[in-house]
Image (cartoon, rainbow over all chains, first blue to last red; front, side):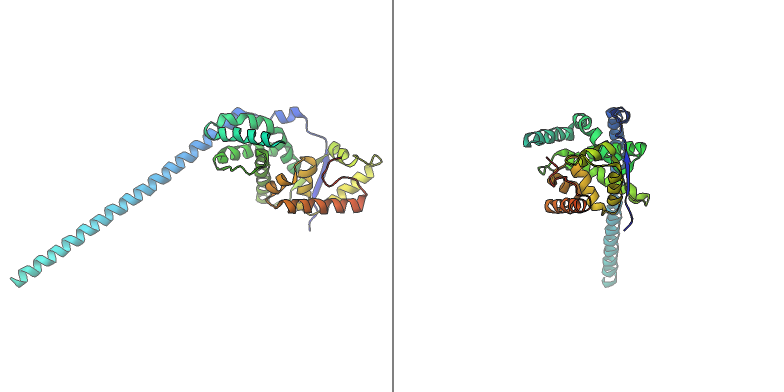
Length: 82
Length: 188
């Protein structure tokens, strides 16, 4: 087991700590990160929706094409039998 | 902290789900304590400022997910701060530092033993260097942050009996080696 590093020090003064306290900056950072998250989420949703739409279009084209082929085959069979 | 005060703070937190500006009250109340808690584990003022601000940002980000579990909301802040500190030290592949206030150490030790001398303090520090880190974490929260066992359990994600056991064992070791008179519950 490695030894822990333990130091003794003087207490930090309240003034020193106050220097780092800024609620306005925190809110600004929060709003910024919220906006960033929303943008990323919007982008991802758009990507998913685009993918689904493209998939549906491809699928419907495929189905239409299949039906066309089936009809053509039927026509050809009818011509052959007549 | 009374049950009513815990509820009141939770209501403030609840309000800040819809209106983040409402969180200001809790920020002002706990900034210094969280700052000190982090500073005790980093001994670096600028790093502490960064981690502290990161802690409150995470609180604001996750305020909607927080569930009331009967502990003060501050315990949740401490838990996030503790995770952030651990994350930082994992990232830089280094061990945590325990930077303790000299005055607080004396205060705790000299509660009942006024003959404590410099040399003994140094011996105590040397002894603490070999204590398992889990014990140091519990001792820090119990005697430097005045947290009760329920809060310690919540912050360190252990059971309440586990927190009591760790504190008891750590104090037992200290007592055996130093003949200290710090009480198990930390109070006179």
